[in-house]
Image (tube, rainbow, N blue to C red; front, side):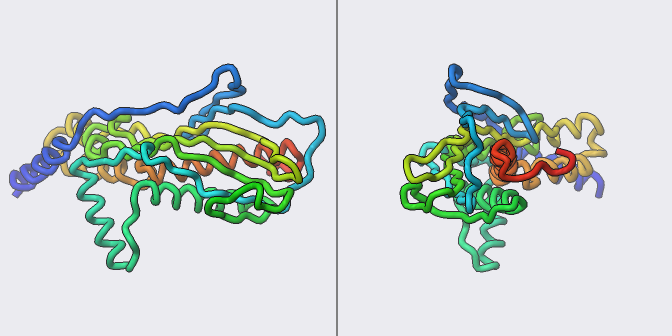
Length: 266
């Protein structure tokens, strides 16, 4: 029985290994001469491009408006690995049973990012609303608007994440973000930055097998696969991490303008 179980485990790992391939990463264009700050917080790499430096604090906005980020067609890199095909078939069946339509990678990223960002900013004293294709010229004055575009939505390689880990096959979401305040004239740019949110560096099943031997293969496969395929190691997880960091950047602007009070511990 143990021999049969071990053969099954090795067979599954073999299928997943067949889906592993080298993955390409694309970097956001940056402007070094305008770069103000580059930091890494909460798993998200943030590079500030511009920030408001006016002498007087601006009037407190009436509302926060989150515009759905643009997704260029060439920004999406799908995952065709064996593990991802199995995962997507499973998700398709679940969504079909629940009566929901399957989501494309860009739809999943937009949904995860928009919901998380709205939830985070709802913790401030300002009301928050999501818009699709919000035009700043059509919005009332004194509105805090968050706009942007996803420049990279790379699903990575789920098979490589499960088998190898340590960043191999990592998913990646990158975006350009601008925070504006509407006025009677042109909107004021309060902050402009780029964000890169990439899935983690956890070890894969092959490493677990090497450390524990064949007798530990079942445990290694179970624990590591669960870690590598959890929500945080997907483009949806990347988008949620990115949204939390964008919210921190927006709250930083609000603090500088004295629109909100600093929370204890911040």
